[in-house]
Image (cartoon, rainbow, N blue to C red; front, side, top):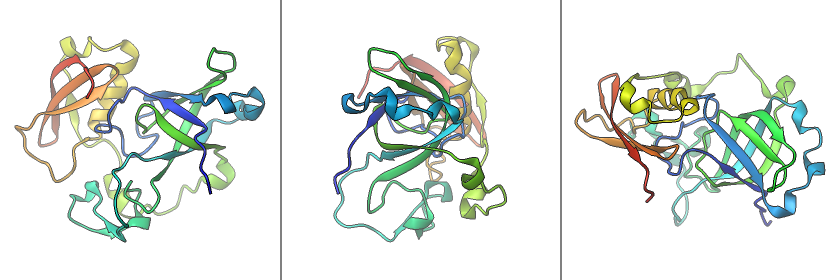
Amino acid sequence: MEWKTIAHIETDFPEKFGIPRQSTLVPELTGTIVFEPEYRQPEALRGIDGYDYLWLLWQFEVPERDGWSATVKPPRLGGNARMGVFATRSPFRPNPIGLSCVRLESVEWESRRGPLLHVSGIDLRDQTPLYDIKPYLPYVDSHPGARGGFAEEVKGERLQVIFPEELLMRLPADKREAIRKTLAQDPRPSYQDDPERVYGVAYAGANIRFRVDGAILTVIDLSEFEGA
């Protein structure tokens, strides 16, 4: 079966590091879905503005591997404990397919690139290819009492973020709360706990450098992102 890329998503993350590990964790993170020329037909989106949330089916960016592994080491479990690959959302799967639930903020019906979908709560890198878009149906897709397995242990903000005002003001006003909440999720692998190590997250055209000591993340520098 041939998979067709129907669209790409534009986001503020040019690199993988720092992107929330799940969608909707940071509602302030936004993106724009741009359809490929073949699919820029308003008729294909008729009725989509009647939904609040959408499911996105997309492609992970992972290195080529020979074969697959039945178990993986989720970073949130310290990189030591192994879980079955189908009990996780690890990108290292037989097929590198991701699934995200995002909020549909608005539909821009007329633009030079065809209809655009503006969404929030994203967990995707800039230019990630999308294979399909489906509506979220609350009456079948929502199960509030469902168990969350080992993932229940790692939900919510983990760190207190200290972002000096003089650095924060260099970011656009509508990007500041989103990056604060993103950093609070702790983008580091759980097995890295060196308080002297400096990390960098590329976001909204900036390279944000920080350290983590215990439960406190401190931003120490912000400069223009110059790419890989």
